[in-house]
Image (cartoon, rainbow, N blue to C red; front, side, top):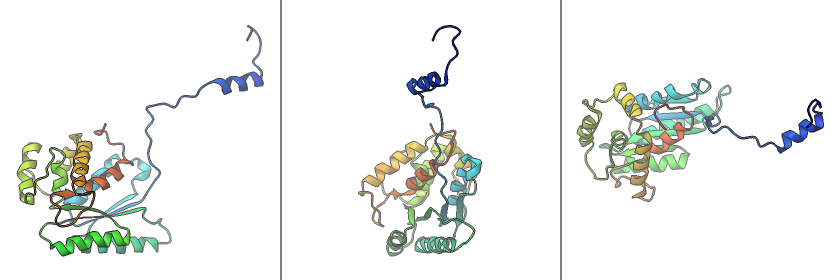
Length: 229
């Protein structure tokens, strides 16, 4: 274009067509809003962990995760999740839950109840984040891969050693330390490796085993977690 010539509309339009628009690489992509219900067997340990995710949710998503500490065992946790799911579906003012999760452990419950809980969840469309033997296995996997069938009490010294202070249940300090360790992705990778040993399935005979990583992975899609790179 010669000096002094005014750019016509057609010139501008042609210029825009020939220019390549680059998408900024640093833009965070947040998934479309979903509503989660997480029903936990424990009334403190698991709810403290999953409620901690709320610290990393964008303001518009703060009301999308409901954590319910049911305080009951295995199959009853799944039944509670089914009830809450159906109740929400009938609510006229609130949207239905997109994902409903039941979080429970094998612990000392019978094989029949544990396997029954897994089967019921599958039948009712409830996503199951179960652990054998306990939820603390998910914590252990932040620090090491464990494929030896040890008792859940044996998780405690492993955690105390790696945390640098005594492990105590129902502690937000422990949850905060786990997140700040920046090892969530490592824990997910180890849990996947453990899950693969059993073909992605689960029943009372699979130990140690956990599906908690699947729920954590789902929640991470909605967070801006500063410790996860």
